Amino acid sequence: MEGSTQDRHSLFLLVSLLLFLMLSPFLERDLLGEVILAVLMYLTLVAALLKLSEKRSARLPGILLASSAMLVTLAGILHPLHYLLIADWMLLALFFGFVCVTLFAYLGRPGAITRGQLLASVSLYLLLGVFYYAVFNLIEVLHHGSFVEAGLPASASISRHSLLYLSLITLTTLGYGDVVPVSPTARTMAALEAMTGVLYIAITVARLVAAYQKTGSENS
Image (cartoon, rainbow, N blue to C red; front, side, top):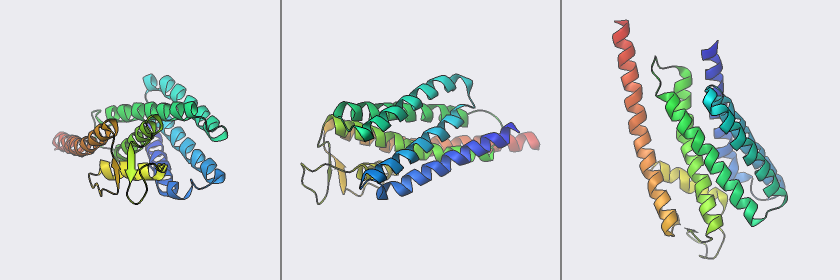
């Protein structure tokens, strides 16, 4: 019963992340789009909270961070003040960073590989992209012009979708070069994300192979 619940939580988290990533390019053109995008973000936060609830020590800090982020995100939509935007992206970065660390520990626990672990491993990879997406937005809010998009003047505001796109192609080390970090802080975080993506794949594959081999030797 516990295993099936964990599988459902992992599936819910993965589906919510995919919805947010796929629909975000179409939902930042007007106020209605901003509201729908916030709802999708809330859905992702709730899904991540359900996953965190499997570990008791992570429940309280996860609830505090998620609820704070939800309130500040809503306040930022209604009143787009600069300090609210800073607080919003900072809280989102802290929450998704906390979720990534907790999920990484969950994937490393001993035992046979489960469907929930496989789904969680995919979700964690996407969550890393969302974490750096929040960090990139925080950097841009703090220092306007930290990122430049090809075809736009350097003084133009970069869209959040462009930063999400930058985060995903950096995580996968594609790096097309049409959206680039230009400030020292932005460049450092982009380099760290690229390293994170490479190391995550290597460590996760090694863990899964080791767990599979251990399970096979115990069954033989």
